[in-house]
Amino acid sequence: MIAIADTLYLNGRFTTLDKQNPQANAVAIADGKFIAVGDATEVRRHMGAHTNVIDLKGRAAIPGLHDSHTHLIRAGLNYTMELRWDGVPSLADAMRMLKEQVARTPAPQWVRVVGGFTEHQFAEKRLPTLAEINAAAPDTPVFILHLYDRALLNGAALRAVGYTKDTPSPPGGEIERDKQGNPTGLLLAKPNAMILYATLAKGPKLDPDAQEISTRLFMRELNRLGITSVIDAGGGFQNYPDDYRIIEKLQKADELTVRIAYNLFTQRPKQEVEDFQTWSDLLPPLSGDAMYRHNGAGEMLIFSAADFEDFREPRPTPVDSMEDELERVVRLLVEKRWPFRLHATYDETISRALDTFEKVNRDIPFNNLHWFFDHAETISPQNIDRVRALGGGIAIQHRMAYQGEYFIERYGSEKAAHSPPVRRMLDAGIPVGGGTDATRVASYNPWVSLAWMITGRTVGGTNLYQSDNLLDRETALRLWTTGSAWFANADGRQGQIKAGQLADFIVPSADLFAIPEMDIASLVSHLTVVGGKVVHGDDVFSDLAPPMPRAANDWAPTNVFGGYWREPLVQKNKAGHLQKPVQHASCCAKPCQVHGHGHTSSWLNPVPVSDEKSFWGALGCGCWL
Image (cartoon, rainbow, N blue to C red):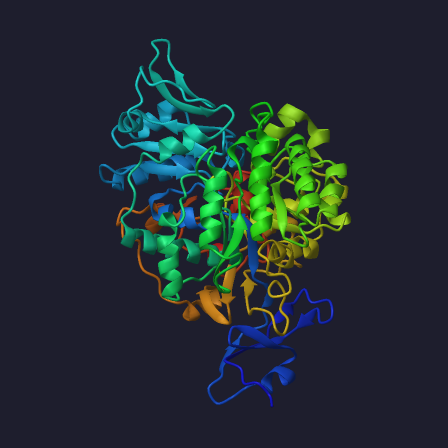
């Protein structure tokens, strides 16, 4: 008997990533899974009286993107409080946004720019000065987090957090002071970010109802960028179960639009074993369902193993007690059959961790238990082989796209050329997953990660890699789909457009396999489908978009600016002349046939694009008509 589909998606150009059936133009979906993938004739056999039919209008489609390392749960609770500078092309634009937000933010709320950007993305190649921030916001607290290295606070923020001449700098951090000993507003991670996060935690929080809406809006922002699944890596000040109540409420109400596999991150130094003992007694390994499921321990297993990746600072050396503490935790996790992950930036830390893992494995065999390192920017070939021998994997993130210039300054271009050595990892045959480490150290935009893997360039335009460490487009896409599925303990169940797998796919704004490399980072999704259901629609699919609430906090930066910087539309002033664009709510629907679709790169180009007599102005752009 032929199964009847809930929905047919016809007239598409599917890249399936299924080697037995690499291309298709139609799919049938029932009960959240693909039941047929092929041509329209084959797929229409599954049509019934109540089957919904959606025409993809000849657009290219690919599997939904899967971030193997992000912090969705924490970010969702805060999203509508944050002014995002992710992708903003100039400091002038960023400061304009800041000033506008200061004007609408009521006391005692703060204006927060919490990561996701780097000074290298700005045309000016610098951060704002403290004087500029104080001039823009004399009375409203402003907190700006830059990567893991620093935070900038204006005078109002210093007063709000209570930092004075008598406030001591904490271990691992520095409060910069003037000649009189007063805090200037610059906080430095030396080398860990605890001072940055502890200061941020002093700010006001949204109430639970507003957090719920904020989380829904953040998931929808991820859907807009093509993300259908994530692994949440926990985080500092993210306590289980208290900080998970909102996401679990949404899961019970069937309002999740992103699949979430979550890891639990220890919160108490020297009490890590107690944390994992308590949690492993509460949660059977991998408990949950296909939308929300436990995924194991980490990324922090023990505080003494943390080697923070502030490339402006020398490499930190974990303390001598690291191995003993790590062994106690890993033994417990393997006994409980909990998968685990470990934050490890440097090869030196990885070597010591592997010594411990190998010791535990001799006593209690891992036996295909999924475990992996996160980051691994400087892992050596020898340690890659050791990871393979233990059956582990490596989840990589595009942190080098944001910090590559600092890495080169400290370690040199030759070392940077294989940091991380992605191609060597793949050649060794170990699982590799793509991710972002969003939202603080890097942006949550998956296309920035894909562009970095394919081009080898930072968001500031610096070339990091040569051909021996670059990925072709299909391989990069596999890391963000089937690759990440392994890290979520979902390999074989998602990541491909294939009968029997979860029905997650997207229709990007342009064909990933046909556009110029420079345009990859500008992609978004025009249609995002999770479990066969449309969770986001734009452009020709906008009528399919589910309704979304407005942020509960009326002053929310997201109400005006959205999340990731969106390509602007040119406007004309009263005299009829073109002027520099302002933030706009949606990207252009009709890419110009002359100039392509790379507006951000054009605005950063030395050509005076704001001059209507220049190349861009003289020929015009179809996107802006």
